[in-house]
Amino acid sequence: MKNKFMQLAINEAWKYQFHTYPNPAVGATVVRNNKVLSVQAHKTSGMPHAEVNALKSAYLTAYPNSELKQLVSSLEIHEFLTQNHNDFFKDCEIYVTLEPCNHIGKTPACAMLLEAISIKKVYIGTLDPNNVASGGKQRLENSGIEVEIDICKEQTDKLLFPFIKWNKDNFVFYKMAMREDGSVTGGYITSKDSLTKVHEIRIKLDLMVIGGNTVRIDRPTLDSRFAQQNISPNILIYSKSKEFDNAIPLFSVKNREVEISDSLDKISKNNFVMIEGGYNLLNTIKEKIDCLVLFISHKENLNPKFDISSLGFKKVYSYSINDKDEIVFLF
Ligand SMILES: [Zn+2]
Image (cartoon, rainbow, N blue to C red; front, side, top):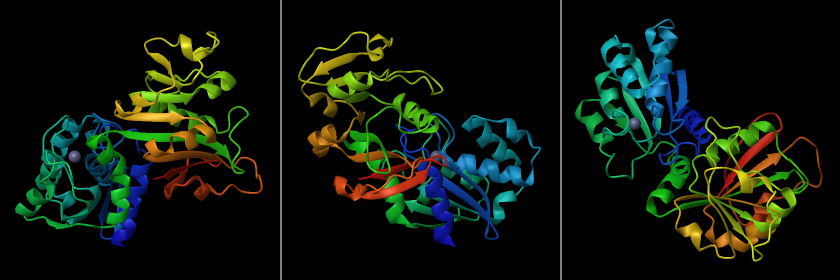
């Protein structure tokens, strides 16, 4: 059961992988008498952490008309639950993929909230490697709350890897959209849901890299028009030739820099980088990539099926974006 509950938290967190930058992707499940009350994740930086979202949802299962429903900010939810928990959480256990934070940053500390509401037990996947926030486990134990660590640790470590990497130096992922047979050219491959997801991630990037040939053939815009905010990333076009048709839409997107260069040095100087392209560019810069992200369309039943393990990366996680598209993460 422990692993099952943690797995729910892990699955939820992966849905927001990269969206939480510069924060880690974290998920949480609240359980009472072996019944799942809520499964939530941290969705974007500045918004409530996974624990806060999960505690809020769990509380609302018992008090559906509570004014808590209206509260959005982490501070408001913390204050409400601290004052109105009514011992509701005394029989609840929470599963968190990462050790609850213990320092007050943009949001109040989750460990303090768990302490204030006297949660019964906290299960943790990975202990926080970040010294500033760590100490959550200690705080909980000091206040008499039972804590168990290393639940599904191998998987929670994988979930945390991008965060560890962008804190250490930088994180670079390669995004490619393909059909089941591995074909990557010829117009839009995936659905609007996938495109929206890519746009949501683009607004977080420090730099986006794209191959010159892709720019010439696809004539992309590379903005974030389907995201909540249309913030367009700075672009590096990797190309030996500096000649491009200026009418290609990406050149007229406002408030961003576009550089054309045959050097990839810029990649290591930016913290969060996405590279978009096909097989050629992937093979050229394989060594610089921390993660390969495939958007695979299953819309047409194409054969033979492409073997993604032939790309030289190992699949760590995948899920369906909708009934047609799947997203696959490979390290
Ligand atoms: Zn927290």
